[in-house]
Length: 54
Image (tube, rainbow, N blue to C red):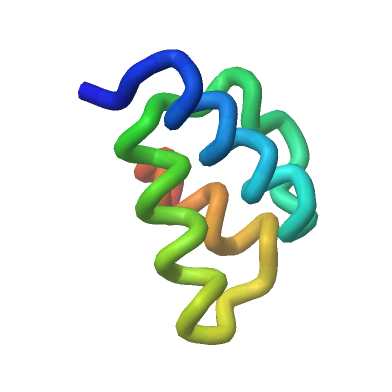
């Protein structure tokens, strides 16, 4: 499990990448969404897939 600072950093990176609503995502979801974006996914698609909506 991530420490408070690491979780804050993940949320900040997600926000800067354009993933809206990252404050309601878990550490695992944030990591997955950022990973998908690194592979070229659009922010909202990455978020939906990370949260299991697709």
